[in-house]
Length: 99
Image (cartoon, rainbow, N blue to C red; front, top):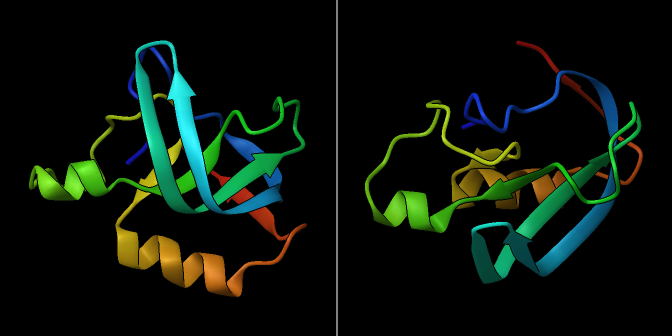
């Protein structure tokens, strides 16, 4: 899942600039104390840790499908997909986000 119209996911070429086995995620209207397997993107004018690829276990628990725009700009995946990516993705790996 990508960003809703009010907080769209940026498009362009980026790279993995940070890898967090576990990290809190905080925004204007949310605070999730512990999210695992987070890959944050950099380059292309992105501020540090502003856009990440991460699991959304709350979305899974609610039975909400992925592939529907519903984030604050990050790219949400299933927990299994996030773990798979995290285990195989090094810092500096290019990431292309297309509309």
